[in-house]
Image 1 (tube, rainbow, N blue to C red):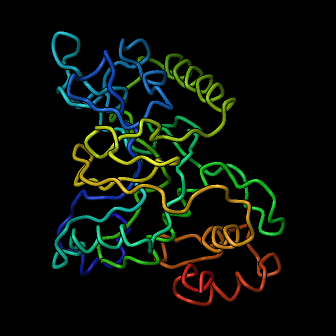
Image 2 (cartoon, rainbow, N blue to C red; image 1 turned 180 degrees about the vertical axis):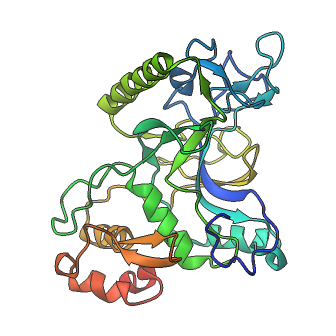
Image 3 (cartoon, helix red, strand yellow; image 1 turned 135 degrees about the horizontal axis):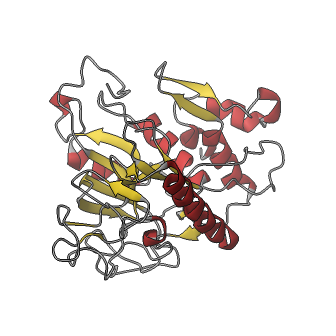
Length: 317
């Protein structure tokens, strides 16, 4: 069972979530795919010609434009649904353990959740523990947070935990959870032709990840585009935010950044570190201090904020 907040009150499973959209229209994919980012071409890490893989499930490739259907491919035709879940909502029915959609959207538009400019970097392509496995693009935070030096660079992909922890502090619906490490599933039930083919595929992906790392994190919504993939009506200088999905194929709302760069002022750094200082333990369904966070490393302002329910309210009061 997924690590939902309250299993007894989570009555009906659902797929609604808040997260990032990585979808991108491609000549190789489904003609109905839309574009939400051009920072990363995920065709670089998939195997459309099946040089390395022998088979996948009937969905085929979920990213890189999706599956075009015959005569280009003979998997189920589907548009690109590349995404990264930050918080699974489940359903929009509170009686089933979900959240009313209007309530959710109102909170997201109220400014209560601080949304930074989303600039991320894929950190690995991995096989998950399933048999056969899913292949995933990971967006890990590969270095520790420095809680002492307020001028130290923030870790790559810090924005994901920052938003995740805020959402978990605000929303307490029974079906709430996050499906593991931050990742985008690219294909399911991946069967390789041989161990050598498997090794060669991951070597290819590692080279792509290394190439992407040279340029560093990039803004995703660089169009900028709305939920439907159309140009934003009133774009600002920073437009890379998060989306609300009814399921991975249906994006309904876009929430632009409201917590803007730069992030090196003391006030902003205090807010960021107050959320990065904690991690949600899905085994105990409770908060724990980050491995690198100790009380000795926090300023008195952060410690005071962590004692209240929502650090933002304390730090900004």
